[in-house]
Length: 348
Ligand SMILES: Cc1ncc(COP(=O)(O)O)c(C=O)c1O
Picture (cartoon, rainbow, N blue to C red):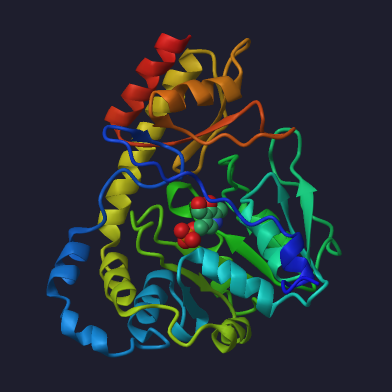
């Protein structure tokens, strides 16, 4: 007899993107920001009193909640903070769907959702994207909760906030809009999350991408108080350590730095898009810090991905019927993009 819960034994764990370490490598596989975080982060770290680590951190991280509330225009009681947005996603599946219930999401999308549903002993239920990778509006009875990734990954496409608002209106469950990449695009759903009549929509953000802090583990979500309170009830007592609170606060207080980095990434995104299109590639119009691209025939995405990997240029490839002809490229620095383009020219 197994000592392991049946549903845990049956599940395939999530496999995060590869984190290789080669000198001189070009790492464009996990949508990290090529530029450093705000210098205010460095100052906060330098000023941090290491002896204070003997004390537990603020369990409800009031300072960062106040800063986020000011940034997005809501009350601190409408803000929850997690150890990366991945932790918030896990708490979401525990708070708002029963064991045996259904967690809805698109296909393809961020592949962690289905794993979290399985961990919860709930059922992941995917709704195929349209043929052009845009999002259909899910039927209202599609699932008990729905995670709408916007912009979506790996496709990079943005759905109009109005489409998400239409879906959430009258939907019986909770809709979580995963806005990991929203700072790189032209629109977002934060106004829906903070609207006074909102009862069932949460917007989630991360400091991993636009704020250049993937190594810190800091995500947050905003929404109606009853939903936010439910997340506080079930979280670990001290889910945000003292350093994360101090560094997160410094980064969130320096929005101009984040916006300047985003503008640089957007400029490189435009340049990389044009360079690939000029070489005959198909590039979806990206609202993110990555491109979803299809090489011209007769090149095969899987082969190109492997050949670049051999040269220590790391991209992301998702095998499968919908994604197998495509490659995801994180928009890196101009120099990284130049290295990639030069390698593609030698492979062509
Ligand atoms: C759509 C999406 N949501 C959430 C995350 C996780 O972000 P975090 O680093 O905050 O856990 C990612 C990471 O790549 C992502 O692509």
